[in-house]
Image 1 (cartoon, rainbow, N blue to C red):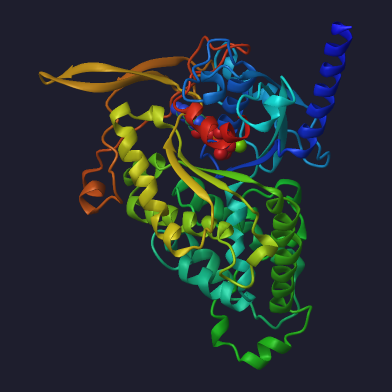
Image 2: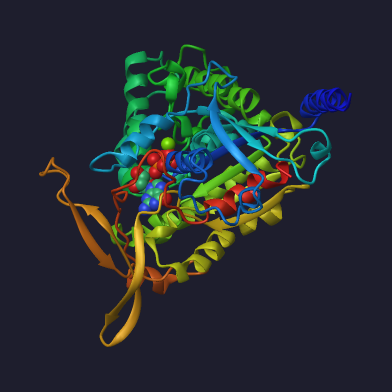
Length: 489
Ligand SMILES: Nc1nc2c(ncn2[C@@H]2O[C@H](COP(=O)(O)OP(=O)(O)O)[C@@H](O)[C@H]2O)c(=O)[nH]1
Ligand SMILES: [Mg+2]
């Protein structure tokens, strides 16, 4: 009699659990972005790794569900959106944990991964109904460069050309862009377009963008898709470029330029790009995000003084962050309004690669990033978005310690760098110990760039990491706490 009563109670409880699980919001669409090489792939790999290997040596004491013991387990499950490439977790882990550990191959587009996280509800209503609940976490990785295209939506081709020309004729871009601008300047805008020439100049413009990004360390790259085209590589929709001195052309002539003229064709492709590429991304993906993490590598631009473009590349990063954040401001501008703005409730900024500096430099890293986002944070209308800034290392690749230098004790870091990577295909690594310099806690001034005192090297991942153990990290638990913990109570 009693046992059948308990059985019925259990059954009821399960039923109620199912129901509640369906009605409760147990789903998060987490978007991860940042400019190329800001550390997105490493970040997602580590986040997934920390969750699925929880218990195997993980250090997640600031993540309440683990700390309070209600985290049960997480596993990868099939993603819902079949048309988006899967985030290649296995390959990334294989690179990191191989015999000579390597950073994962860079990715060039959007990818997705879904985790099912089991936990024991303790405080929410769910605890009356179920011993176990599931939080589904959809993680989307997409290039921050794609968000740099948003401001183009408000511009005409003329305006965009004018603005881009201004950029291309100032330091440090001018030197590199001269030849390209001269070539375009030689074209009669009203002549019938030569498609070959258009394609060639578009290629040249794209190469310029690559130089700006990867040689000069600049961040404002427009159109952002040009350097990370994903499935659009080689498509004619990416074959356009800014046309200099358009404002000197008669307005009527410009308006009436025929569709097959150079200018007509460039204008048409620009418009098509905005419709089919920029808007499409916002509609298809951006709208469904609930939470966003923006990764920023503030250390690389500090290193840029050695190539003489420190101040510019830093100012450029600031501008790029402004442009990226514009995507999250609600309501203010009629054009973007609700059509493109996702209803995100949490926005996390992470200064990545914190393992490149000693731990007392983490606070300055955070205030530096806060300064970079300060302007946008105040000028944009973020409604009820909760924000936080952290200094993190997704995959910690150094150890810190103390050393003596000229009789003084100094904090140093120790890690491995690849020695003679080019000549020596064997990839021998070399152990180095260094004091990388102090991170300025506000936007660096002239003296900082003159001293050129900041020096950090690219470390290789540490050896000895294994697939079934959690990766060493800095503050990934605080990341999880901010992004997930409130949904697991
Ligand atoms: N030391 C260290 N280096 C990192 C970390 N995360 C990323 N990196 C470095 O940054 C590079 C780019 O990272 P990746 O995740 O591929 O950037 P993505 O282009 O944004 O996906 C890597 O190849 C590493 O050299 C980290 O946590 N620690
Ligand atoms: Mg990547």
